[in-house]
Image (cartoon, rainbow, N blue to C red; front, side):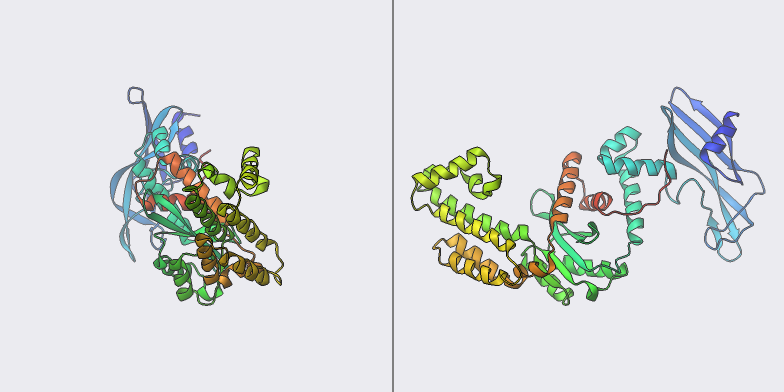
Length: 407
């Protein structure tokens, strides 16, 4: 098989297209392939599909293709504009690339696979392209795949934020808790993010009235946004975030007491770790402090925290009575941080108890957040929040890209 015939088969070009020539430039380390059509060839209208449209004029274009061994490969072709009686003069679509792209479909498929596994800048360095061009490819396929997203069966939504960069810069993530996938991401963490999600949900065939459950932290902005835009949904406060409030209260008690009791220095994580998860050193430190130091406020706060964790082990019929008993103990502890934490639980009473009916939490989003932060660390951050959102969809959106296999 001659080289031209081989390239014709390998590229998969179909009539009227055909490979006319190829030239290997050893000095430039580049393989140039010329694809053309014979004079008098006819094409289909790119808009209505009408056949037998003649070429009106042509424009020469170039596309980057998969490397030929170690050589950079470029496809060159005269792309015709055709005269359609119904649609006018339009540029035809070439079978090896999408309109407006400087890459072939196979090259883009390879780039998408690589960008899911490694930072975009690393992918760009390996393939020898500027990363800005690859970000445009990624955004195109992500937005195209999201346009096909069907949210008509969405019922349970998890909501959490992730840091987009240093400082108070956040991206709110919305996940389908049944399918374990990110379905929407947007900049910010205010009530406006809920409104934006509602609009996106409707755009993708979802019904706000069909959403039965939301799970989030105790952010007033999130709560007000959900109450306003999803009045039919029940709100469950995530177990992790509820426990975080208690942990922060215990740590604040320790911090205040340490000013007068220096022996507490260095014991922070021992008080915040459950007994079954403590290291031997942490367990020994707790025993030493409980035995040698009397009337430690931190010890009282610690036992209140451990007691609260038994709340999740109650039956649905016992839960509220248990919580009331814990609340009475916490509010009479004479430990101001603990009292404030108990007051926070009281203000969100229904959402805390809702867990015993919904049994949902944001564990899925915590895992996704870890993936996002790991990707961000590997990439050493992203130049724009939009780039971060595109990457979130790529690694956690479970999107169907329908790309050709580059191998």
